Length: 336
Image 1: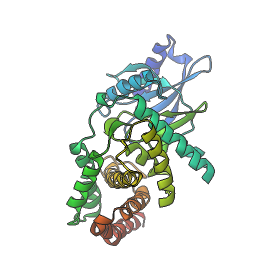
Image 2 (image 1 turned 180 degrees about the vertical axis):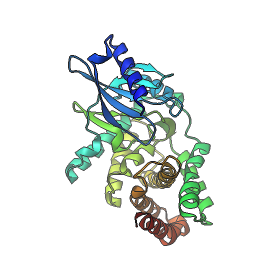
Image 3 (image 1 turned 60 degrees about the horizontal axis):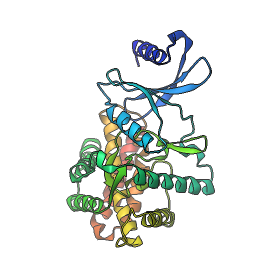
């Protein structure tokens, strides 16, 4: 970030409080996979707020502001937007501290409880946020996401052709996603986007929210970057969510527990394939560091999901016999 942009951000933040820029302090507070950067603003009285710098030629902050205000008004735990200059790409938000959910994964008991709490938050989001006001997570978007896998992971990174079973697998995953009830979907409900602050679990980075499958945020959480659950643990969490969704009417009675678990496994395969493509794109196109090292983790997530989809054994066998060796070999060569 250039010094001129930091100076402009500092001046803008000071103006929001009617202060001279010398009266406030800015300290770096991290970034993410996008081009957004965050700074902690410390005011003369010692209170803090969070500044988001989102260069408008690289990031459109309009959805974040619109969704944030809407969800805040619905009583959902999201940072309040106190001020925004969308032309400059500057936002002033609540400071939610420095405790993303994964920092609380200290032992198995706490891991289980934190995930159950997060699933309860998914239910609150689905019950309180109107999906009709969000872009649709339709067949076209699902297809574009899945196509990131053959384009960026197979072709551009591995120089590997897609298997003959890919089209059938792709169509099946899209069909399974579209069979589910439509709700508000955060779309990156990973532990890193959940903040513990004053005993409350908050959602951040919700700018890509859509109206889509009921299981998607469940999968973002359970098949995220920090934990790999056994099939038994996965079924435990999904079953807990299922019964809560049945109780409050988000899931119709004709969808059995076994059917919902199967839909979740298909949704998990879709997301894992998308992530493999996105992480390769972040590396090759955006020159982001550290994402290739995470590929084996999401490859394992993919394999865990495919085991539960026996009708697609040909694609599953290709993943084990061809994709996994190719990824591991490419990683070994790039690290040598």
